[in-house]
Length: 353
Image (cartoon, rainbow, N blue to C red):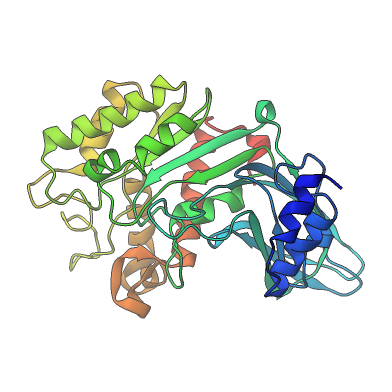
């Protein structure tokens, strides 16, 4: 056992079952930065903790067992890493995904969370037969950074969920999501706060995608400033060799009497008359930036579901909230983003579920 592992083990306070799992990992010489895989010795029946440093990790799981089961995996701040899937009796399946570990583990301006990688084994009848966590090879791993607001971020508590929180469920091993969305942010504040773009920018490597969706909180941002801020974000990503992707904002669920969303509130036209989606489209065209028109895609979906059917996408029933999405809505919107990543060849098909 390495001396550093012994020293670190001696300082642990074993107060919960999860911390006991962490102690076992150190006792086996698998502390922070360990190159060898970490496995079931780090798990209880419903949770796993891996005492790893911030970084990117590949996770391979075997789900199922002697009886029929239905298992999903979430991690860190409520990210859906593997959608719930059924398995027949005696018919286990193996699945893999890649996960981003960072501090803070959720919103950049939020609580730090628990160091290391935490996974929750859930579902209607969960069964985890095996798990293996290994550091992801940088040269073989693509990363998707998310720059956004509360409709994108890793929301810390139910019933809220951002679409970025659900995006990992649609991606396979070899691509990770680093969600730096943060509640309440505008293009102005995202550039001004050192915990936000100033933190994200130096992390970007050549070839990384950076999806940028900011508009909901630019309520008093004039058009020239909004445009300039988007251009600054695009230029900052390109300076590091990354590939920016502009994303128009999700619609607000605000119907007209004719069943359409053709109004400024729904389509993110602010109090100064700035049409955020239109400006975003214009910046994308002017600077040859890929565009995901999530405004158009979410508008079509909400209108197709109608006044009643669309309530489940948002938190209308729980909070009378027509801006923030439920887990169901965030999942539906993440699927739209997945479809655009595929259609525009931004992520290879082999890396998408």
